[in-house]
Image 1 (tube, helix red, strand yellow):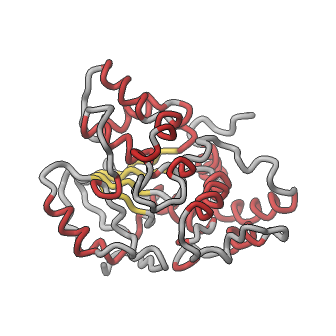
Image 2: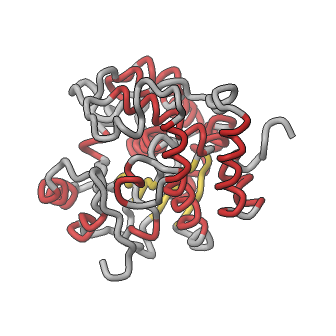
Image 3: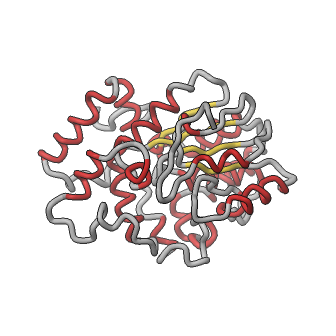
Length: 295
């Protein structure tokens, strides 16, 4: 991986990609955590199958290659044995992934504060204590936000999902967005127009389904349907990976941080964002294609 940046943390080891033989029709779903990863994977799985009742089994059929807690030899062998079109998940920024000219890379971003507050909920729902000192359950002094703002983009900080890691994801994806096989999606745009998202992804993957079937696939990927069928749609659903599969689908909304931060905390967030991104880049990362909802 001489031409790729190294991302190595308690969860992530992007050197594992060296064991994957990429195929021309592979589909990569590349996101920071809690930015719509499972949602986009489900959209891809539904489009692949053309069946709204498909059991997605994302952890098995569309594995998270970077995660260190699964044996890479087993994942590589499973991927190699798949006779059908494949999709894989990564929380590694694009500058740490193998870049193939024919494979499709679907990058999904979200307002950093929404992703952060969603991650706060997520760490309470998984039976692992690695990030407890970053995300203490009782946090009257605002330690969690300070570490989110101060952390770096790699290593432990990256896996704990610091703001710098989200910014790195955006910059690495945006730097490649002129390639026909690298596409950026925003969680807010997916919420506003799920049918349009399906149509765009279908076009990228060169998949066509009749309108009636597409409508059924869209309905299957709505937040309410996925939450109501959480054992089916949550990563490793029904296997005890999370305390509650339904709680993995927390709210499916934007702006969950509104009213949760003080003016000083919002100012500290602005102080990181303003020098890190040009105004148009920040606007897209926070609000998506249609911009801030109150403008």
